[in-house]
Length: 414
Image 1 (cartoon, helix red, strand yellow):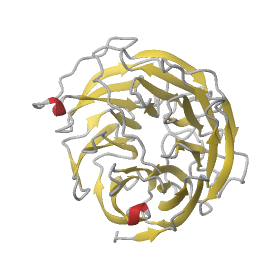
Image 2 (cartoon, helix red, strand yellow):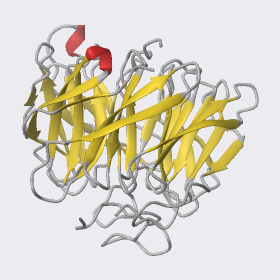
Image 3 (cartoon, helix red, strand yellow):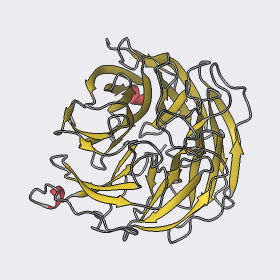
Image 4 (cartoon, one colour):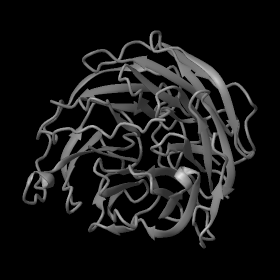
């Protein structure tokens, strides 16, 4: 299941604090709806393309395709990896992509951050944040103007695998997988991180089937900014917290339970903020969740299919288009991207089809800020696949051959 075991090829010394890929354990259209319980999230920020150098060793220059007009100028792409894995990277990968063709070109590596398996950008677009998914977890800040490391802070837990920035830009939230805890760090005016302001550990309910303890897999703010939600795979629970914007302290306000053994991994909100889509890793299912902004209460709907075939599959993450009409799901094992029509104002997902991801084990997916491209980080094949998104139908069409990136586990297009 999704317990924190050491993966084959892991480095010694405790760096493999959680499983880096899941081993072997154990469609027609489908529709499910949940009762209705707000405002849409801000679009991803713009950022200038990365320069040809970064702190540490010089970065290699590489030519990228560039079309005519400002809309086709290369855009930045940051890549997460595991530095302690056999065949892994040496830091945060630097690249650019052509927003028209989808072609990706490497720009070197930003060293100084170990096991940067998940990345996020500040709402103002000036600072990049990365986890260090080690036994003694840390989070780091990088100034994007010159790719200079602004320092790192301890998360107070082991194996941080996800982080996000509160929409107000003053707080960084991170999820410690192995410890089953959520940390909060203040962000100063430069983008640097202060000492941890809070650490909340999930001590109840008891672990679900096949789990030995809590495993916080994601922490995200609701679109209205009113609540912080932590998805815990080990306890089959999504915890809702209220964040004190003055002190950076979390107060639990509700819990939503999934089916025992579902293993919830990632929650992605619909733009209108009243529904969210939950990927359940352990039982290969997804669910539509109703969200009530005033109370922060989440209601998990019935399980529905991922579009995977007969083999073993672990759904990883949803991505939802900015207009809220389509949702995409990364299927690890089946190695496909499922396409869903979003209906009834976000209350229904209707599975349309799946397309091959052209890689092995798509760990994470992300849409470009303009929504015209979808990026999939394929962990086991060490590649990033890029797809054109048809705005009318939501159909995905591969944009050339995948880009090689060592143990690619996160792709962040800006």
